[in-house]
Image (cartoon, rainbow, N blue to C red; front, top):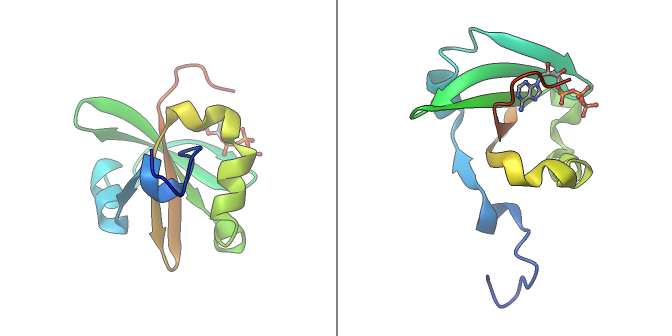
Length: 100
Ligand SMILES: Nc1ncnc2c1ncn2[C@@H]1O[C@H](COP(=O)(O)OP(=O)(O)OP(=O)(O)O)[C@@H](O)[C@H]1O
């Protein structure tokens, strides 16, 4: 844990950052849609042998990346990483079977 971040909850300290082209690769060019939510579309992917769900934020919600992470604080254990490029913002979660 960082001295100036006693809770250890900042994006940068806990979660890995991915580039957009990483996500293109991991999702096989966003080839399989898992579902759609209020913030954007969720895609299936693989990172190494782990299945992931990649939530790409629609432009209108992209500015709320950090807010979204707070909203989803209950899911933070399953949050693997994030992408934070100007027009391509996304969150990478562990894939969960039968998620509603
Ligand atoms: N980790 C995951 N593993 C598998 N499928 C997922 C995962 N996360 C999301 N999905 C799929 O994508 C759909 C949309 O998820 P998302 O979280 O964006 O919407 P939501 O549950 O309506 O919440 P929100 O209001 O925050 O958008 C889900 O209904 C589910 O089918």
